[in-house]
Length: 404
Image (cartoon, rainbow, N blue to C red):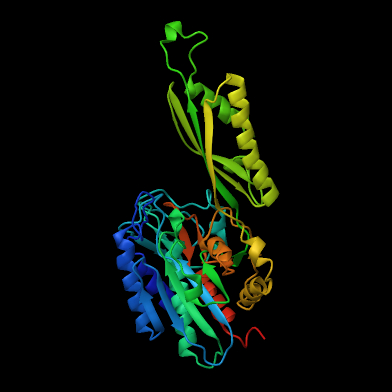
């Protein structure tokens, strides 16, 4: 299985599938639609049923039951992050990794900077040449799902129910499930295969909101500005300083939430601040949003007029609120990981996931590991042996006899 995963993964990352947050089409890039047809062809070669790439670039397929009762889904996304180039990826394969620096055209991949590399001494690592990302997020998940389903199909002694597969576009720009038909997918529950390091399983993610703060100043000649000018850029700096300094991404981890200033555009006449707000706890999430609106009101009182406005909307919610109602789903994945000889790592997702969106659409959907690290940039890498363990975990989840 390992060699098949390697060959498939290296083939998949040849294709540029970067999503585009500014696009108005679905999928957001033509390359993803092309890739969806390629994936549908791969699944058809395995002689799966109901293979389809729809007009939105969503690929689905079915491995029918051979006597089992459950309907389980496995989902990965085909796009790579627009944060860094995913075009013309040149992979570097380090077999029997010695624990040292990996020299590349781009920045060195070093255990001095990324100590988790030491875990992989003696293993096979795959990274890019440092001029692009690798694409393991989430073409590793695609390769692992295909490899697992291929293995199950070739071993009819493994009793299983209906196994549904889906590969989605535009996850990286928050639109992976925008056109996903949960009812048509036909599953009782599913797993996204889009996690990180070996053994990781997640069923919690942030509650998320975005807020755009607009400050309208009054621009006059600075020589006669006393008592008249309102410098929107200066007000913006004061607004930023009013938020809790310790509640930023660079100072939080685990279950701690934050305010993250994504963008600032400012001059004397107008300033615009774009924030994302994140918290696992529903009550603390509401408190963060309330704090932001309170600050807006306070600033308007201070200046005696409405110079500050906020446009805030929720983006997604913590899937734990849904998945905690069906704990067997997580327990099944934990046991499947243990059976591969790996210790499960139950970790919160400090971000979003298709699984969160799908859970609130009625499809409980925890997230399991792919084996990768440092996604969305030139330092991304993955361990081949971890990919094999991910595929084995999927096989164990599928096998009803394994779960009896």
